[in-house]
Length: 344
Image (cartoon, rainbow, N blue to C red):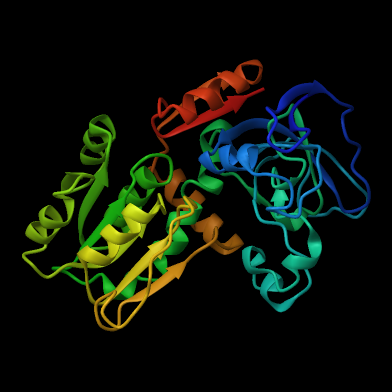
């Protein structure tokens, strides 16, 4: 089978021929129907050895869905032919957090040496993907795997970040989304569906801003030197109750601090490598700053249900797996709207 693998650090990945895995006891082989190309994959390609504790080679692709192809001994909850989404972060499966479906915050994550399929373990940029446990699969109801695949990160990650702050999004408040690309365009839709807050979308790209307006943003602001003042105007000088920063560079984090109100939340979702100095006068009083990582298995089920009901939709373009290198180049150049999905 074909697999797009990172074979060495700071070297371009390769589309290689590798054997089709055979599922052992408790394992499930999934025939991939769609695998989303995520901007964080570009970071993996750029990082030197040692930044993350992953061993190469491994197949990229951490947003995956498809059909069960074969199951190993002891698998009971899924069967061949069944459409499934693959939950992205893989924990130990046994600690308290994992048993609660919070494998994104597994208590033994540091000991595992990989974060999941496509992140240290073989992912879905391939014809088939071996999933180590049926607990990591969520049945798909009414969704095409190619449409469902990006939901596992592009929707799940902002869903988790937004859901934890919903109690602060009362009528009359404002939520700000910085960066309205792959994750951000889903954040706009989720805020529209889950809260009464007014939504302000911020981006450098005028086309992305127009798209954000089309899918539910009440106001759009170009990310420039006037952005903070524009947001203050849209909030009638009060500031935002929630800022979701899907970029995470110094400039966007500084902007987030400038536009929040007291008691607000700043959720850093993007892994751009920036820093936000926190001091007594650095952020408004009792504003909380947090990073979030992915979401839980129950939250993935909720995201898939929203999509199946037609309440959220990933803007995506499908590509053949043979075009995967060109797709990542387009992603690096900012030429992808929403998500690019590889369909083997």
